[in-house]
Image 1: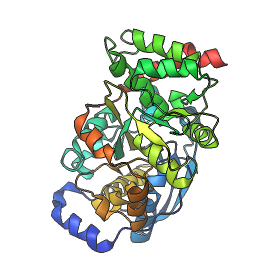
Image 2: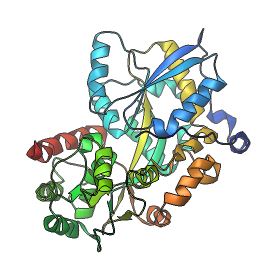
Image 3: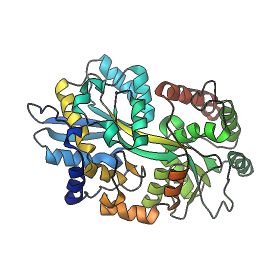
Image 4: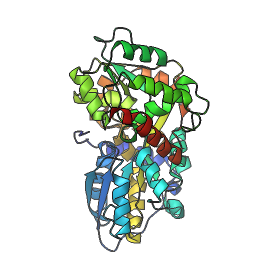
Length: 391
């Protein structure tokens, strides 16, 4: 999604918070011989949250980085591109900002630099990350660093003028979809945060035998998705298209998350009056964005990138992640409140946030997503069993 440029958090508030954090948590990396250009590929929409942080780094350390070059790509396409560059010994992407999708695919293919050897130069992640964000860090297996976090979903979003009584359970959602053919939608999980959150949340909602094993423990989930799919016209390749169709009135209910509820309404893609609901037996399936470094990057650039990661994990920079609610709340580190965020972010959350989210986050179980190999497996099964039926 294209988001308007964020204003910067006040230096005074940021400095006060940094003053409360032990200096030992942030170690020094090695300065390059001359400023370098860093190319960043975003496959998660993460720049909406972090571009201001990177720009702040370039301003603060012009002797380290001459500029950041930003590119965007669909998550399923990037691993193949990087693998081809590595085979040709010409990697031109220095840093990847990814969700669990491309993180998992890259781990499966051995694409990312092992940062275990850089722990002495990285922050003490257990000390600074939110507890659930640190659990998400475990999925990276030392091959990436969590930089933003949110509880995610799965939730459903609906237009109250079209859906007078929203479904309260998975069975009611299925029944509603049968009575209102082609009016419910979600996007392909391999390239959609809400899509994969819906996919991974169903085993909890349906009481499947093993929510962590899509091949052997999701019998109810695959049967449910097949039945639901009979009433879905098609599966878009990304979430933005789903939001547009809800906003245009061609769909009445969509799978969503906290951020994909707040941000599209703030941008005017989805009407402000859209409502959200959770289904009976709901568990949050948390989500995070990671900074990962492709193998083949020079040692000098890796040193700079370690310094960049240190910088963007500072609380005053993390406060920028509130953005326009896209990954609500957004910050991955502890004690970063909305009051520390830019005023533009505070205004968006005040107008488009949901008071019920605080209660839902506090009083429903929080689950980590599938392990990387299992997630790749789940995407493959979905593509073959569910997505293929729509061509």
